[in-house]
Structures are given as C-alpha cells and as structure tokens.
Amino acid sequence: MWIDTHCHTKYSYDNWLEPVDLIRRAKALGIDAVCITEHYSYEASEPVEHIGREEGLLVLRGVEIATDRGHLLAYGVEDDGWNTWGRDNYLPLTEVIERVNLLGGICVPAHPFREVGLACLLEGLLDIKGLAGVETHNGSNTDADNQLALRAATLMDLPTLGGSDCHKTLAVGRCATHFSTPVTCMADFIAAVRAHQCSGAYFPGYLQAQLPGNLQPQPVRAELAVND
Image 1: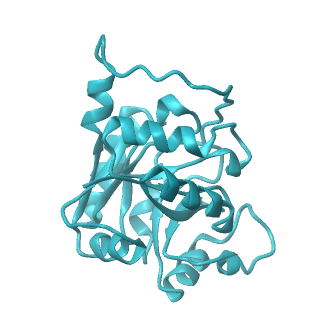
Image 2 (image 1 turned 45 degrees about the horizontal axis):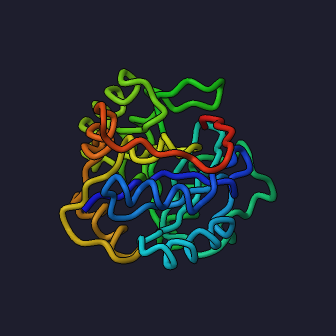
C-alpha cells in the first residue's frame, strides 16, 4: 500500500491547504493513506483525522519537529507532551530523538540534504544515532538532494520513506512510501518501518496524473505554499 508520509495542511499555519482538498486529491491519485505531520504540534492535526474518516481515507498523524540540526518527522507520539523544551525551534536533535524513542515513537529526518541555513544535517546525518529511517524522497526537494539522502540511507542500513511535504493541493502525492505489509494504524506503521517493510519513491500515480488528458484537479480555495 502507498502512504504519503509527510503532509501539511492549514493547521501548520504556513499555508492555506484545506484538509478536505488534500484528502480528496490523495484519493483521486490512488494513495491509500496519508500521514499529517504539522509543524511543531501533533495535536494540531486532530481535525484532519476526523475529516479523513468522513471522506473514507485513512489519516495517520505525526509531527515535524524543528531541531538545531534540521527537521525530524516523529511518528508514534500521542500528544504534545513530547516537547519538554518550552519552545518550537532549534530543539536539541539528540535529546529529541531520545525523547520520542522513550515514548515509543520513531524519528525520521525530513529532507536531510536540503540546505536551509545553519540548522541542516547534510553529511552529519551519517553520525546520528537512534533514527528509524530516512526520508529519501521528498516532493519539495531537488532530485539531487533526494539522491544524497538515498545514498545515506544505504550506508546507514536504514529503511527509506517518501512524502510529498505538500503545502498545496497540486503537491500532494509527488512522493510516497510503499509498504509491503498492510497498515491500518500508527502501530502498524511503526512496526513496518522497524522491520524495513517500506521504501520511499516517486509515486507512480502522481507521475501518471501529469500526462496530458489525465487528472487535473481544480482547487476550490486559494492556497499559499511555503516549502519547509
């Protein structure tokens, strides 16, 4: 099954993407589930889970965390109690990983080779301990950055994940993660990652939709995209 494991909506407060538009776009592309990873907060995505049930699409939830060495996708936390630092930015990377792991979750570096100022992992990724996987396919990345992440995951013997990092409707599903075992909840998701039963990729359904005459969605709301 295919899951877009890195999605944002208006609840990240850096875009205007309505959850229902994201969900309907994912369904139209043939994606089986999405994971909403709003910035800074797990609890912010709760409304999206309810909309997913109404629309008939599995919606999982995580959080994108801004650390002093880049962004982490955390899966398996159940509230915002993971954040014990009293701020949202430049959290200590090693301590965040330890905290999420202690709570039974997993951490995956998001777009680790995207240069966004001083807080970037880049080749330093190879020295980080406690990671469960690497986001090797990010829909907002250059192909070159994704290739560097794929190389790092291979060297680290870690499973790969793919996510669109969408902040607008047309970005949904550009990259996704293929799971070789069924995922019906976050516990299944985490178990599959730990068992290396997943792999990131450019989602075939997205590529097919770009061909002339194929799926051309008409967003019903204006959107502001901020890639992050």
